[in-house]
Length: 291
Length: 318
Image 1 (cartoon, rainbow over the protein chains, first blue to last red):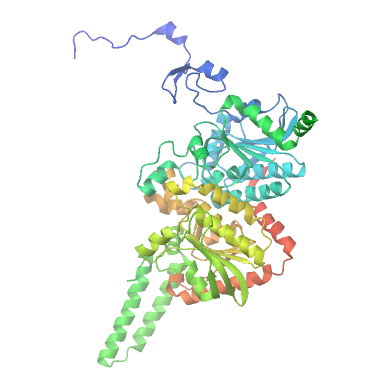
Image 2: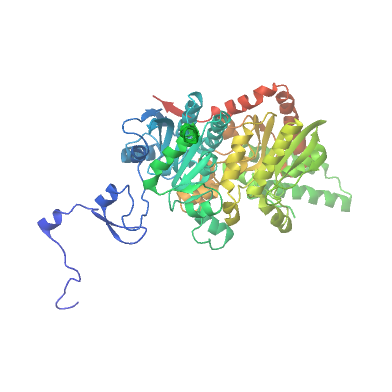
């Protein structure tokens, strides 16, 4: 033990320390730089330095993509049930309760109708904070009802995805939601209605292998992990190194799977433009210009 | 050398005793019929006892039994004039899924099945029954041919799951499965599905959207493998037996959840003990359902298929 022990770092004590709220700063996952948290919030949850996309909550996403006050939620009263009495680590109903408390949401997806630049749409937004936005009976039912509503009302459908896949705690009932949602989309597609998917980090497994991959147009946020199997499982199964950038939005665009990688600040404008292209709103202007 | 599972051992030991007794009788000209009779009664008793009380994990082991008949073995026994059709017309021929026109009970069908291998060489060819995107795309191509030919589709499933590999991801296995799910809902021919062994999650569902979905008694169908579930929950794949129980993946559980329409019985002790009888039992169910499905008006096939899946899910409202 040294005789004169000196702290290696100076520390704040007492009053001075109490004045600094916890979590004021954070270290960026993208560039390792230090970000002032309030700057992140002003900047759509993007790192001001490197543009790393931090997740948005479903509520924030709805605010970003719709006209103020235009969103009306549907089926907000559907509740998940521990049908299997799932005997795992912890109790499913407790996990649901904790997720509800944490997010203020009733389930991992919010669905409803909204208006974006005077264009009406059916909108579903998933929130990864709620049990990894996994799809059980309720998520599948809400997506299905939303799609059916869009079909009945001849509306374009937009789904913002993020998900760890089918929800294990509801076993095969979760897997069946993949079929159910895809079946609803078959009807929507047959009516000639547009379906746009916005993939956000991470969109994987059962959700990627069902409604998320069925968009007429699929866009993704930069750096989003998108895939069927998780990278760890692939590495373990194949015993090989994964290529650089594997399963990122950019990688998928290079391999022809998604239409565009769209940075968040552009997302609202691009979505609005896409809806306008599909609705025919832009045809008249062209015709007028031609005359 | 047949594989013997732990819980099959008491039966095998009794059976060995019977054959020992019989060879002793042949060598020494002694009448052992009484002893054999007693042993055979004990075998029947042991079988009843063991197979009436299998744990979910034991069922999984039976479903994966290396001597279990695979879809192609059923096709050989149940179909004539099988005309296999290869390739997805896009990238490759995936041997993990096979299919083609065939006649079943005199009726023309399009049969599609997954394929596992019996030895390493076969398994290299068919990738242990785990399909790449090409397998699903081939299946869809063949289903469209079935529509053109107006013949029912019979899909036999025994796969551990779709392949989690680099090439599979690069060529969008998730998209291949998703498109199959959507397109199977649009088919105007009957689709009859039977899970004969392993129903490995999305890899099974990718050719599993049927008007009817049957499952063999000892087959399983699960959202995730028990090992995968155990690795996530307990960070220990050795906890697979617990996971198998939690997932409710046995034929009985799935019938209770109304995820499957009928359980097809297997020979006592499992399909691997008597392939011909297993095929006969499956054949009976397939023919019966095909006869029923072909009576449904063509324009009702897609809507009733959707209605079947539309009601899946259990939740609370309000």
